[in-house]
Length: 518
Image (cartoon, rainbow, N blue to C red):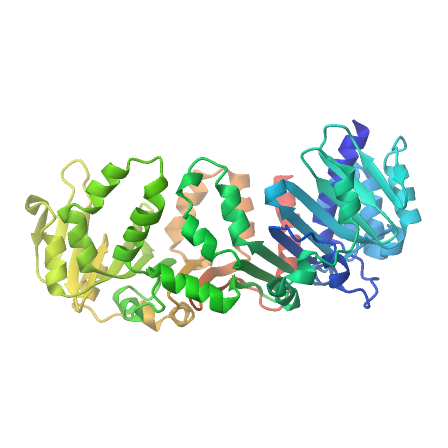
């Protein structure tokens, strides 16, 4: 069992090692050296720029951080291994300036690949970690594995790889360590373009393989075969960079022209959101989400492609979407929907609003006619809806200029109908960032929340848990994501301190939280 534990430890080190890549890597090493090992059937590829991540982390010595002391207590040899990686990869035998993780879902195999800097040093390190380790060598490739574990390590003079297989066959590892002229990097132009993008972490995924994999699970019969054919050459890319004061994320479907053609053919996504709706909610928003889509077209897609082969009750669903109520809503709604939490009541209950566009006032009246008349009343320019004595909460709604608001805050409804002239979310600089067809925004600036929210949370949590939460949340300003086109998205986690790298702030904060836990 010692060898099995070591294999698991080594597997973890490959992942954790992205934080501890050596500063002593040769600049001439190219990521394509490793990428040439990836087989053509790879479904998911993650490329890790370990050298840059290490530099940004500010991690000079492992003892600088308390969380590393746990590893030292568990295994002094493993700690020494990481310490050598920090000093110079030659002292550890492994170079992880560029590390690649990949998965071939169709064959249920998963691999991690790094460069070997000095085979003899690595094997010496290995023997120190586990004196009883048995290394098998076939030709120029060495292996360690345990029967039934499914995890095998293999290396030659150039590379080291960990592979998770159903049967742990060594032939697969021999093949993995061999550069391939017919591999993914050599024969997929989109993947080659992906590798040229800048990012500390980069993700590439083949849509069609993922969808085929999902068909094996419950509900997989709902996968649209027609869509699957359209997605054959379409992939998803994502790039994450740790920058000063923020973590930036960007990505989207590619190749762009094929992806856009597919999205337009589906025809239930709108290219632009009606930003006039931003004027209908208060300036301060703690949570904002909006979406521009075509409701009728989306439901028709569900009906035509997904339910035709689904084990769900198609007739019941058909009766719902064909009902007069559903038809009225489909004909009335124009597709722009905005949700916002913009305040909190005395007991922490959020003040929230939903604003959506309708085609005209007649469309609003058709929706109004669906409500039980004894549950709402018309007041001065707006309506008040009551759920009855069992639920002592009122909801207000109104129509204005092809927009409808539903809210639980009287002040918001009064602003909507023009009784008050306070600033709107359109005056908030954040709204300029969120002008895409869809977006998500969460205010993480805990100090900007009403004081009584902190009091409520403090009373609901144990003292140590609250300190843990407060210490961590104090780092952040906000998180947001936005669709910049039909095929691309971008977003960020924004930190309050704009002068220190985001990864270094996170690692430093982990130490603070460990202090609280202790």
